[in-house]
Image (cartoon, rainbow, N blue to C red; front, side, top):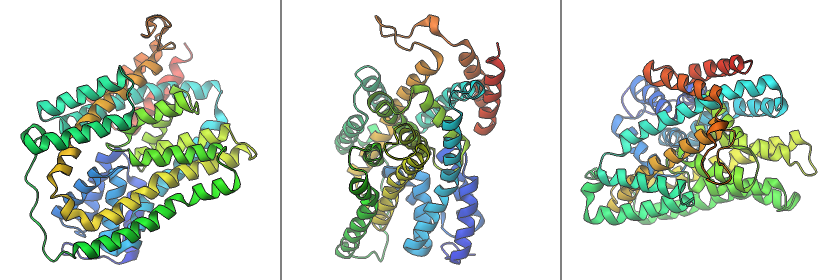
Length: 433
């Protein structure tokens, strides 16, 4: 089949159903799977177009793999293809995550369940460190980028700067530096312009309509909540917070988790630090984007503060609302920006800003690794006087399991699902000692 030959819509549905159920391993594994299925095996999209679309998805907030799936569907069958591919990429993982969240809420407090997640939390530490190393190797290819990562880490870890502010400053710095010292960012020449592009006026008109339609879709559940339950409902807080999160999720799930954890744990008090690590562990075991951990957070937040609803009803609504406001913006970004892709790639300031943001994300992930380590390894992560962890409160079981998980990941190259399973088993065994 020649490149860029549009397949029947039914075949697109079958292919992305398969991708949706097999998309384990985070964005790197998911993108590799789609490349094999779409570019190598079926030749539906040629290599250059696939890579250019991936660059666009890195430029946008939200999970890049899900957005890439949406772009592929849009490229082959327009809006209905984008909707089909994007939804099929998300739905399998969302349903599995919902079932696991319900099990987690109902089994909370059981000794065996706590032991199981002792191991999972410890393994998550090693997984986050692995993500930090992978992203760092790709993103920090100049001294300036390394400095940006260090500044971002220090701003978050020591000054407790807000995550969106760190991203904003990094983007502005990148745009300014790119104009005078592009080599500091390892900038490359933009690709050549494509021929036969529609006029800017025509594109702008279509984009305005697309944005208005998807803003309405994005806001619809919030309007219904305000009209029925009121803005005092926890569901309003959930929808408003995760809508805000959807706009600042540059750099993938690991980058935004630090901000989400800070707000969910310390501001809203929806979860404990350990529960946030549990949620990431569950997200690692399910197909689809790792940002699905937001659904776990929304479910537990509504389950524990149901208001006039039953906990189960509130939890289901919280999970559904979180998923809606997390992924509706992804469709907005793709359907609005994909037609502009060739022009966006040719704006040097935009590319420089993105390079700087990607570098700062390494510091954000490093801060997340530190936050998880303190709360998983120590019963008292901050002593009253020093603010440093109380060494006497170290959980030797978590430390041992975390070290074992790191050996399995880095030395023996075992996959994440296997490592999490072995860590959970180790948690059950060591909790008996």
